[in-house]
Image 1 (tube, rainbow, N blue to C red):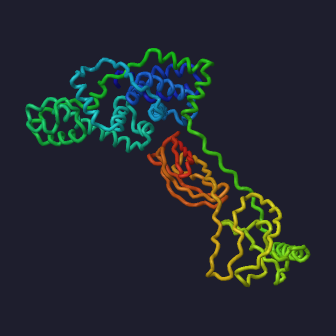
Image 2 (image 1 turned 90 degrees about the vertical axis):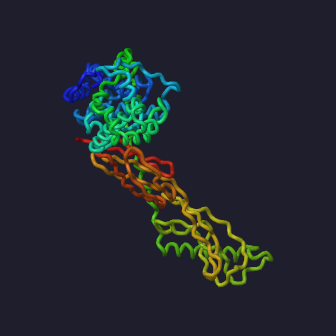
Length: 490
């Protein structure tokens, strides 16, 4: 590696077991083995000395505090780098970098890599995308194997290997283009037009055009023949110098009692959030009354109402006369059925009408309504109290709309599988929902409407191979977020 001591996998496993056993020397040994590499990696991502040092500090503390979550010591190196990368990405996403970044000093150029060659190599790397540069750096300089690299980047080992090989070929091609653009302008008349103004960095388009020209130009091809392999050049690049005071800070945080809260906070930040608590099942609905009970109650209401109108003084119309047909006109019963069962309550003060021979009833005073008996386990659907029309051709009242409710989502854990089911529950009314997005290598989709008190399940899959200790999220139109977690045992 780039001036770093080589660490074999057996040492990785020993460190993991020592940390898990609570060995007080393990964190110091871990720092000695990996602090230089991790600091350079963080510095590549963050480009600030203090931010990179903080990322290494928090990552090592998190690894020590959460070592129990590592299912197999053989996974330690990938887990260590994945933890470190997660902290760097969090700092970038949350804007935890200074407005003016201060890069760390670098070691002297090693292995006879002259300044001109270093400039060519950096120019070739500049043309590549961030993911290609990171994958090549981790594979060549940090010596992560495809399984470890896939753990860090959240992809499959096969995809990680393909990414590294493509990046290696692209950097080799770009390096040739950079060398020819800088040194071959006087020898080949085509180079100035393809490379652009002297001293201006090549972009991807010019680099591709110039590389295609080199393949067919004998003059330019001679200039790049015998170039040193890209891997050798990458290992010879300078690295960021680790701050001398970082070791003391890491050990102080790891062991000092006054830093117990800081350790807990760091560990919690790296731990995936627990799945949302499952929504308790809706309360048992009150069964609908038998039909004969409803009919008897309605008949009693009619008799009481008729008796009241017959014996009450001034119970007729505005002129004090009794109704001509001997019956009091009353509103039709309210309470339309819900979408999940028959009615469970009627509106107060309403009673069935014996017949509706005419569309316009004789006006009568409306009796004082009696309080409605409360229902249990549900919210009554608003109803409209109006007399039904005599003929279908006349204006009809539209069915009452379901009361809007709240979507309650619960996350799921895939374990070592690749699928699980998110729970969706409509609370206090009907809910229209849709999936608006996902994050963290999970995929799902769908939309629909849930009636009040109803529940459904949404299947979620994760892609990119088996990922231990990973998590993703599913976002809904209501603003709710379901957490999805999974593990890996290989």
